[in-house]
Figure 1 (cartoon, one colour):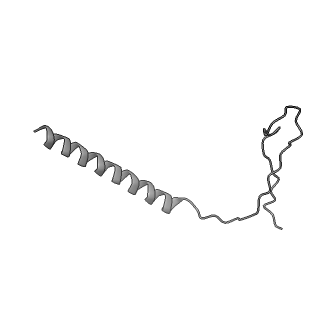
Figure 2 (cartoon, rainbow, N blue to C red; figure 1 turned 45 degrees about the vertical axis):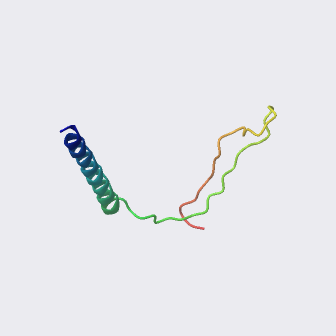
Figure 3 (cartoon, one colour; figure 1 turned 135 degrees about the vertical axis):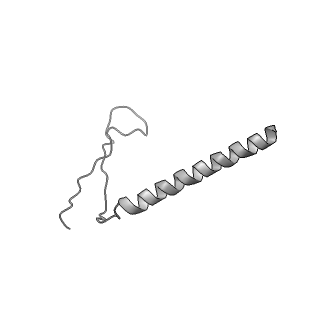
Length: 69
């Protein structure tokens, strides 16, 4: 009886997981747009800090123009 109850619970969990993945994939495919703008991105950061070591002194940043080349 316990084995039957465990098999039923496992099959129900797998069915719910499959349904969740299917619904997520359907939503992703139907509503999210494809990438329309592809531009190279060159990140800049400072490395002239006072502390010795491989750490960066700032967060990476970039300026990106979406109007054209």
